[in-house]
Structures are given as structure tokens and as C-alpha cells.
Length: 276
Image (cartoon, rainbow, N blue to C red):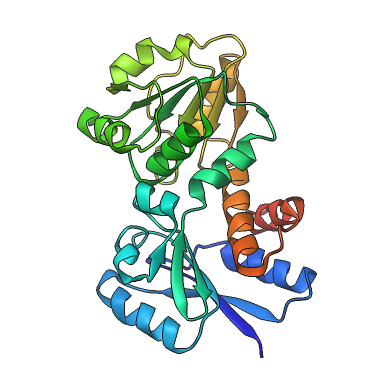
């Protein structure tokens, strides 16, 4: 019998996950289908009951449900529990188990450009769910130093204080972080700044970069944000969010099927959806 997988969110029509995963099922000879499901906040509990009732094999979770879904699951992976968000659910013998592959997907995608992170001084920009997942995962990986900045400093401080992994860290406001940019080997932009309709926005002024600095933006549509362009113009190596999106999906696929898929194939599918 064909297995069913899905992604739930609000909105959901823009999701590129169905094209990516359905191609992977076909390429790996798996009789399965991946369906986008529009689920509003007020219907989340009923939706989870329905997914369990029909025996769905697994599903992804996107905004605005990554945090609130946790109370509707049977078990949580320790990292997902500490992050406080779930983006992947596996049906294990009738139990819904929640995982977070966002942070690990980011690190796997980054490793193609930066194989070793242990000696790196890192700045994370933003204090949302993606920032939290990336911050916790980098702390677990054991980077040399891990600072975080946000317009509301208290939100950055909360992430640093709640991280269960020991790491040298400070929280800053935007202007303080701008003054310190030259100290970082790796700068990671996690806010929506630079996405349409705010394509010309940047989260902070990027200048005075360390020689050889690497700048990452988790946005992949557009493929080069103004933030990345300015970083490149200031001599930095850059990476957009396509790798993170591909690898978080690959890790979810592996949890569902036991197969780690062809990430280059996944990358090409997303690029084709973006119009080449």
C-alpha cells in the first residue's frame, strides 16, 4: 500500500518540499506520496489526530506550527526538545516522534564549504526559531565562540541562556554586533530580512569583515540577498540558504526511509522550481 507523507503549515502553497520529496520517492523506488496540507493554528490538534488516524508515515512541520506541535506528539528527540521546535515527525509503530533537522541540516550544508567548525568564532544574527536551532546545534558541535545578536537583545540573551550545551557566548544588540564584525570567522543571517517584499533590507550594516570571513544567509529565494551581495563586495565568501533547505529535507527523508538521498538531485529540483 502506498505510504503517505506530508508537510503542514499556514501558508503552505509556496512549499517546495513536495516536488523535492516526491522526486526522491520515485528515484529510490519507494511507493509513497508527499502532500502539502494547509492547517490553520486553530485546527492543529484535530489535524494531528486525523494524520494519526489515517496512519501517515511521517510529515514535516513549517510555520506557524513548529513550536505548538510539540504538545501533540508522543515523544520528542532530546535536541528537538531543547531547541523547543519540531520540523520532522516520524510515525514509529503508531507513535508520533518529533525531531528538528533545521540546525543539523544547516551544519551539514555548511560543511561542504567549512569542513571544520571547532576553531571558528561565530555570530548568529536573529533570535527566531531558525536562529535557536542553528545556535544550539553549533554549540553542540563545539565551536570556539558563539555570539548572537538581535534588535531585541533580551531575545538573544534568552537563547544563549537556555542553550543546554556549554559554549563561550555573548548576546549583543545590532549596533554592538556591527562594531564587532571583524572578530568573526563565520556570520550567519537567520532573519526574514532580504526576502520579498523586503528584498532591499539587510539585518545590519556589513563592513570591516575579517579577512577570509564566511557569511551565510538562510534565505534561498532570492538566491543572493542584498546582505550576501554586500558581504561578497566586502571580500567574504558566501553561501545562501539552499544547502540548509536541501539537507534538512535529506535528514528528514533519512529518518522516514533509512536512506540518505542524493542531495545534488534535491538541489537541482529546488533550483528548477525557482526557475533555474
